[in-house]
Length: 272
Image (cartoon, rainbow, N blue to C red; front, side, top):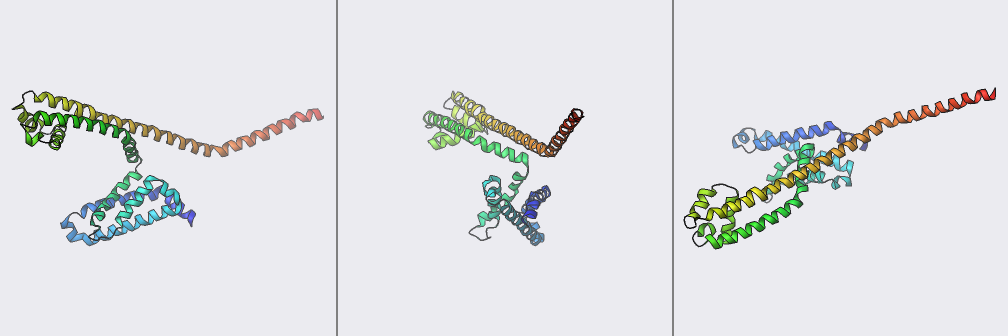
């Protein structure tokens, strides 16, 4: 029974079926947001949703039985387990927020699509480097916010009256959304040179520090791509070795027989 279950779990067709059900389930969850559709076909969508959830539960249970403790050592398997666990939370008022998280089942596509999994792995690998950049940009924000509060706070209390106001205003400046008409021009009415301050801030944050984020993420994804290619080559090497092993064994056997035959032929004249 266990051998049959292992074969089913590891069968690529099983994975394709699960991926198809995830897509169908995502469509159902989207249709459930429409009051008109729910009024007409809500009962059918709920039945389909429960059936698909039951399939997911059976699939997770089968993987746990087959892989046992190894299942919980795989981060992606644990992710699947948590997502399905959240979907099983009772639909009560207390857990209504958790029930809304059942849409996370769509994220199981990440575990089934290698390219998506590689992207997510790259993002996770970039987190340590991004932490240093976050600290740097936070330090720059803090310095510029204090300067802006002291320079412009008295004449523009709505924008730079407090340190919190300055931090928020500078964030809008960094996004380049209406920073000229909404921030720079009002400040320049009393401080004509203020444009220099904001341009320097934008150069340091938007054009420099944020690009560091992109660089870290790109480097991490490249490292993951190299790692994935190395793993694929290792798998191919193992497969080729396994396929060639019987041939090599046969060659060795034939070589041994040929050597014995030569030895016999060489010994016959000496015996005559």
